[in-house]
Length: 78
Image 1: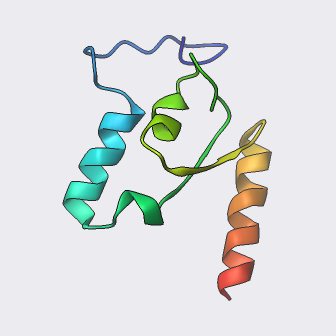
Image 2 (image 1 turned 180 degrees about the horizontal axis):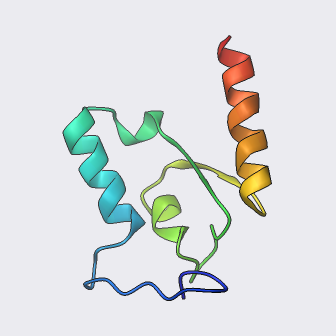
Image 3 (image 1 turned 90 degrees about the vertical axis):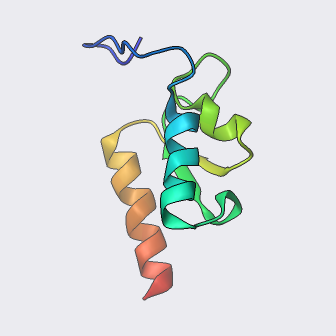
């Protein structure tokens, strides 16, 4: 299930982990330098493949939490 109002349909093995590996390959950014922010970072959650890759993760509850996490990161970099 993609969310409360949608269903995600993809090929087997094409998940966020796959996308993150493709991002790594295209950008040259190693996975250990990526912070993944998501609301479903638990077994069975659609964000869990990022955790399975070994990425650093930050769990949020909603879009506002995502915004707050990104704002905190930007503030630290400023």
